[in-house]
Image (cartoon, rainbow, N blue to C red; front, side, top):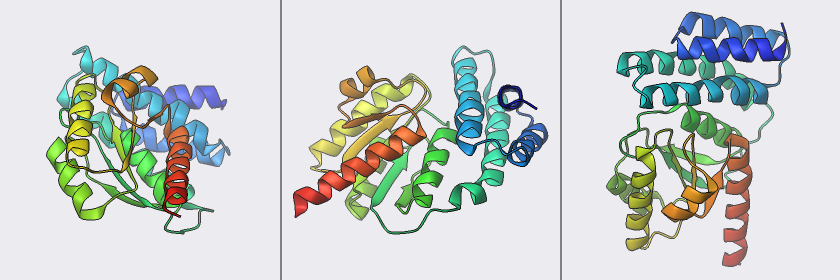
Length: 219
């Protein structure tokens, strides 16, 4: 089966919330030696983005959203051992991550959290629908090197800005990176974040760079 056929089928099964079919397609992808980056970027992440768009247009509803989320989580569980392979733990830094208040999407956040852990970062995941105050309180507790805000819905942008303003008012100097289906370079600047992640892999590169620069300044 061609890569495009598998990823398109994966997008369809995620939109339909078909957990069983999603698991079959992930297993087929691995058996056919398809690059995990392609499975994630062109299948799971695109599927998540499409689900978000349909939900915002009220073409699907909360029960559909939950089914799609279950299908995506089932896919990640199968991929998890493969994502962990070859990465050494080295305590490279502390990352606090979460989806701001008003958004319950978790797949993009879950993927990057998993990848960051595999690369050796200590990741604390606050989950979804996280209030600005929760981000502040946890930041004061753990003093993260980087705070990651992930969102798939337009309502997230306002909450990201509110969260970042509160973090700065509370003198939290962690670097802040934002990403997700509705986030762009422009909205990144608007909310006052330090960096924009166009996808999970771009996010990892930028987080690594921000932590390295932060450590150099401490020397």
